[in-house]
Length: 83
Image 1 (tube, rainbow, N blue to C red):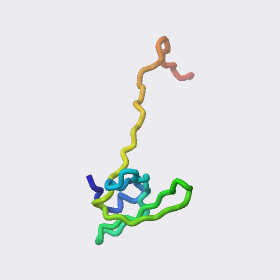
Image 2: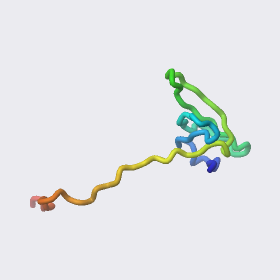
Image 3: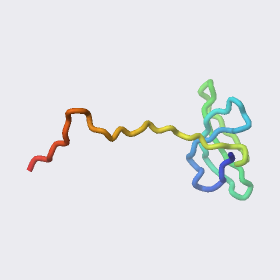
Image 4: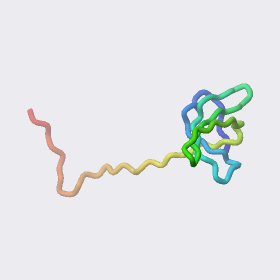
C-alpha cells in the first residue's frame, strides 16, 4: 500500500516496496504537486544517502509497541500518599 504524499509524512520512516532489501528511510521533504518524496538513510558503510521516490513506491514502516502490563505485582497493594 502506498503512502499519501502530505505534510504529515515528513519525519515518518518508510521503505521502497519494490525493493526486496530496501533500507528504512526517513522522509525529509515532499512535493505534493509532483507526488515526489525526498528520503534519507545511512548505507551499510555508514554513508549518508538521499533518494527521491514517487509516493506510490513507498510504504510506511509500522512500529511495534510492547504491550503495557496494567496488572500490579502479586501481593502488592497501591500505597496511599502520606498526608
